[in-house]
Image (cartoon, rainbow, N blue to C red; front, side, top):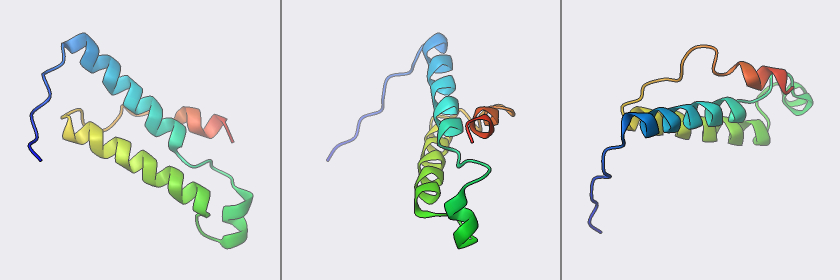
Amino acid sequence: MTSTAAPALPDAQRHILAQALADAISYQDPPLECADCDTLAALCPQCTARLTQARAYLALRRQLGMGPPPSGAGSAASSRA
């Protein structure tokens, strides 16, 4: 299979994509408290899957040259617990 480079995004679209990925990372961040994790004394399968997805989004940000999300981007996750 032949891969082609994606066209460069205008700055405004790149900013929106960067924010969307930061939001996705924050949303997938496991909650601070999980009864299943507490019972297992480790991440439960659901929290493990969420963490895996968040890491995939973070890797995509890095591949696109966006670096890590700004600090504080994960604060929404802790408020959902």
